[in-house]
Image (cartoon, rainbow, N blue to C red; front, side, top):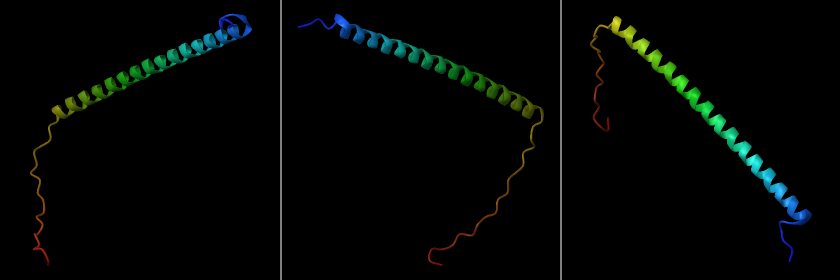
Length: 82
């Protein structure tokens, strides 16, 4: 029996495994970079939204709306079968 780690076939298999591992590391790094970028974008947009909501609330507090009583039309209740 031959040792799988020796000879041309063994070296070729090791080279393929090494190339596969390098690709895996590169892909994982790319995924992590994209995840961090996405989290940063989400945090930035959340900050802008909260800032906008705070500004709108401050503006609304400066100019309160008068309380208006809402009037609604009452609908006639029909008896079933009519």
